[in-house]
Image 1: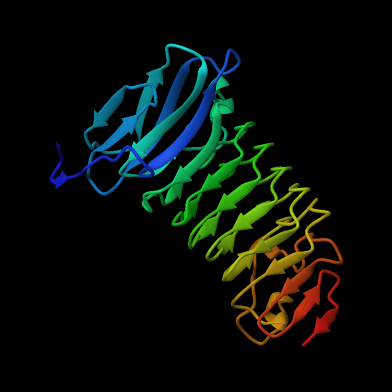
Image 2 (image 1 turned 120 degrees about the horizontal axis):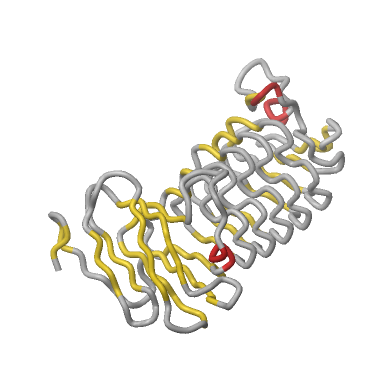
Length: 269
């Protein structure tokens, strides 16, 4: 099968990006996805009910839609895409089918982008696994009340409220965190630890209302750089934000040379 100028073989197994959805009377039978194509190639969508669509490349955001014949659980697979969601911007309208996704797993190693507001209020989404994702927009997962597990790649920027009020979030894994704008994990009340890799910036209220968050690992900063008192290389104070960015006083920030509590006490050198 030829799409654009590249020969691609679609695989029915653990390939592509798989979005498990459950269509119910509450969600309806209609789905509409925003898709961002990889390079200038086409892509394919298998809807999980025996129907498929091949989409040639075109500029800008591409939308694909489907109506199922019956309620039930389906595995929707996207082949050869770099970004998916329901919308490209936070603040756009919510839909009944926002409640449809249960799980999103990228097997392809191609999914790099999650647009702003992409899965905001996807209230039944339980996990998002995208090991190379590096661009996370504004509030793409905010208020995902059942989201428990997230895995990302070398993230460049977390825009405002990426995981705001994901009250069931327990496991968060990333290669690096890069630059964080405000409210990224605010209200993640079950979150106990964050392994963030390299961090360049935190901003206002990134750890606000996280009473169970007790350990934050930062792989490229000393204790003084975390506390923002070193001569150079400090975590940047986004919007003037200061350590500990509303984390609780007992939260342990693990640096390269020790640990500092959220109250500023250095407990190990």
